[in-house]
Length: 295
Image 1 (cartoon, one colour):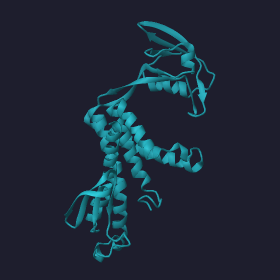
Image 2: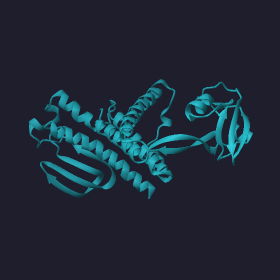
Image 3: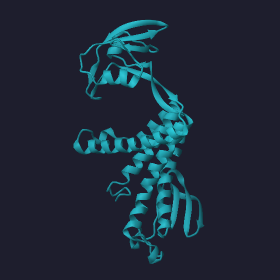
Image 4: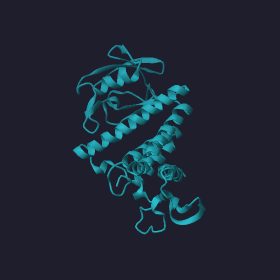
């Protein structure tokens, strides 16, 4: 059921992309012979104002046909053909799909923050990674971090996570925790992880959703959208300079597996994942790759 819901959600992402192309094409006076949701043979179709709107048998993907972009398109008036429009009209028509995807990602982030709040890391240990320093010294799930090297942990990100991940390997930390109303001290030496490029002790901390007011939800959605877009460009740069490989990417099956797994955990993670995918689709379709819109 989770996989079907995920496929439906991804179909909405693609629908938004193609809808962007169609809306901007019509604004530019480009003819739109067909707008389809899904792939394969038609299930339902209807002509409306010069466009055939159809729902296809396979509920994944979709497409929009623009006048003049099909070699077999001889019926469209010359003034409605894509190639006969100005550069800015053609550019905006192609750019619109990506723009709509990025905006859809922003809307999902805004909904996430407005409805559920902002995810915030707490000081409670939720998971212990096997064969890592935290397990070796005896830290347990449920332990609450109180202090590190004698300094109270008030901001978990700044006072604990940053200190641990940015320290040199082999540097020992004194960690004070609270367990069943008792305070206990442990001495932990972080281990440098080549795959993460940082030092870690092997714990995952619990997250909780902190409610946000409307204005904060909007501003954080903007930050999340900009941050996600920037992250995608950084990832592309890593592919080009060799610090990452194509094997690190997920294809359609991998994306469905990841999203459906997030849905099985909670709806907040699922919404965040779909927002990331929508923005990634928008950015990737701007690239000059023949099989994508940028071609």
